[in-house]
Image (tube, rainbow, N blue to C red; front, side, top):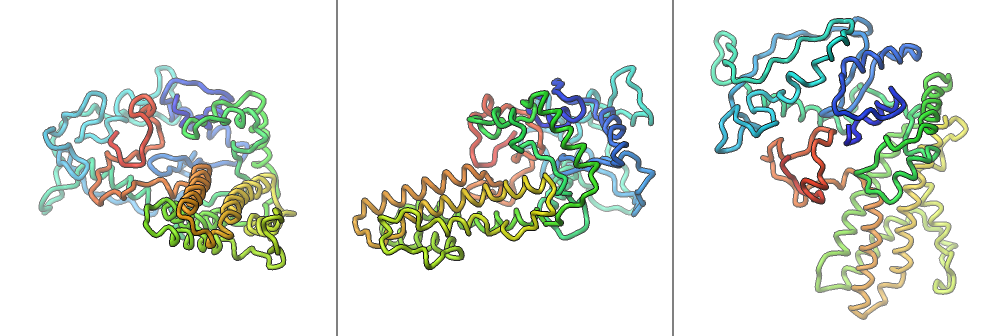
Amino acid sequence: MQSGTIDTQEILWHGELREGGWRDERREIVELCSWGEKYDIHGFVRMEFDFEIMLCDFTQRVNLVSGLALLPTHRDMPGPGGPPPGRKPGKGPPGLPMDNDPLGLFAKGHSRFETSPGDHLEPPQPPKMPLPFPGEDPIPPKGWKGSLLSGSTVVFGAIQAGNWHNAPSGLNGVVLDHAGAISFFDPKYTSLVKARRGVDRMKWRVGNITKSDVELFRADLDSALTRKEKGSDVRWSGLVRSVVERHADRLEFLFEWVGAERKNVTEGIVYARRTILEMLAPYFVVDSVPSNYQTNLTWLNPTMHYCSTAFTSHLPVGDFTPQEHLLKRAVEVVTTEICRTLGVIWLDAFDAEQVENEMEQRDKLARWKGEIGRLMDWLGWAVWVKCKPACGPFVSSASLVLVPCALIDFDQTLGAVQPATMAV
C-alpha cells in the first residue's frame, strides 16, 4: 500500500515492496504460517481497528469458551452511526459503504474475502460476502419487543471495545517479548536513518529500507527467534510508561503556563521556575551548586547525569539481549533530552526571580515556551494527540480516524492535519 501501512509485512514476506493496494490476505497468512513453522510459531498479532489475532490452526491450542446464538442485526435501523439528516439509509456517496451495510468496504471485490482465479488454497476459501443491498430485516426471537441494534451501531461497538484494550488492563492477554523485539528504528539500519532525516514523521516508511538492511533485519529476526537466552525479565513496557507518566502532564502544563497571557508576569516566572525545580530536585547534588554560577558553566552536569540515568542505572545489563540494549539506549536518549531541556531552562531561570523588568521577564517566558515546545514536538508522545478543546460525548464514529490505514492523502486532500476532530 502506498500509505506504508503494511510495509513491515511486505519486507518480511518478500524482502521488498510490492505495491498495489490490498492483497489477498488469506493467501498471505497461509504463506506466513508456513514460514513460521520452522520457528514453532502458531499465530500472529497485528493492528486492525485495535488488534487482531490470526491463528494458523484453530484445531490446536484453542479451547471453545462459549458458542452463543446472539441477536440478529437490524439492517436498516439508523443508530448513532446512521445516516446524517437529509440522507436515506442505503443512499451513500459513491464509493462509500451504505449505512445499512457497514461491511460494504469488505464486500465483493475486496481481497479479504476473495482469492484470484487459479490461486485456490487449502482449506477452502470462506464464502464471498453478498453484495450490499437493502434487504429485509431479520426475524427477531419470539417474544422480542422493540428494535434491534443496527449494523452501524454494532461496528461502532466493536471499535469501542477494541479501544478499551489500548491501556493495560491487568488481565492476561498477549504479552510482548521485549527481549526479542526487533525495531526498524535501530540505527544499525542506516538506510532508514537516512530516509527519515528531515522528513515529517507522518511520512516515515519502512519501505525505504535497502536490500542490505533487509538481509540484516532478517538475520536479526532469525537470531531473536532461535536463541535460547531468555533475557533480563525487565518490564520494559512499565518502564517506558513510567517515563511518559513522569513527564507528560508536567511538560504539557508548563508549556501552557509559560505561554498564557497574563498581567502578573512575575507570577508566571515564579511558578514556572518552581515547576522546573520540582522536576530536577530529585537529582540536584548540593556540592555542585557554585559560589559564582556566572563563571562556572558546568555546575549542572552532575544533575544532568543523575536525571538522565534515573530509570536505567540499576538495570541488569549483563543479562540483556541485543534488543534490550537497544531499548535501554532508546530510554536514555529520551530522558537525556528531557533533562537537557530542563537544564537549559533552569540555567536561565536560576536567578529569574531577581529580574524586575517586565519585558525581560516576558522574553524569558517566550524562550522557555520555545524550548518546551521543541521538546514536545521531538518526543511526539501519543498522550498529547487529542482535541483541544476536548470532543463532546456525542461525536459520531465517522468523525474520528480509527483504522490504521491511510485511505486519504491528507496533504493533498485536507491540507495540514489540525488537532481537532474531522470527518473522513
